[in-house]
Image 1 (cartoon, helix red, strand yellow):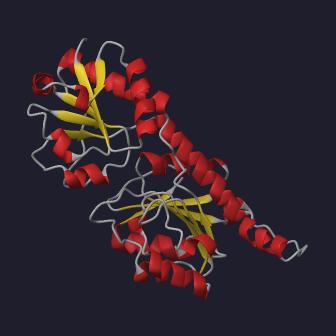
Image 2: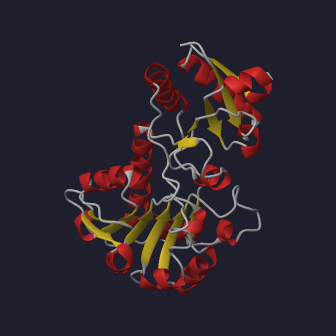
Length: 314
């Protein structure tokens, strides 16, 4: 296999260079080059590109581009920016990412389950006070989103004997997990769960899904974890529910605007834990190996991997 594959991105230059090195190491039989290093003739010959938040105008300079392999699992930005008749979008599906996400979900579920926010507040008041701890079997955790990340996270929670429920827009079954779907199912899981974990893709159907009405359906005193995308959750309403005590605590790793602006009230809110989008970072080594395998198979067989369903957005 000897082909030129452009790496097209709008990421920080140092991050771009590290990805370029990782991809070159993983695909030694190809020339992996920044787009601006290609001649017009070379661009015309390109059939596949590796991308990370690419500029659609850059992709349009490759007239025969058939598909792009994204380095991210989330593809809402590229899916929104590329025309539907443009190249096929293949998202990253890395088992390492699901493993990392399940670890993060378990860690922060335990943080809430063991009342760590309350003990942190007590430390600030120099208050030595113990609180009763319930068993994991008595703590209901609702996972919104039953794709690869959601299922791996639900399984990890089940290993610790939490009472796990799952929700998806359409029916999905999982052994040992009570599942719900649709609008009525969403109301049910919100009403039943002590902790809600959001692991949904951002689509037109999920944008603003957890709005004022949905957050009111949550069990009084419940907490939530958002490891998906900021716009799925109405931030203004969330703050109101936190201020009123209806929601006890929120662990937020994603926001409408990132990095989170300094003036955001989330930074200083006593019932919010702010994380800088760290729940499941892409691993360059494992991700590059998956990209290499997909591209190698394409050059050997001509088959393009399963792409994003543009109607669904993922």
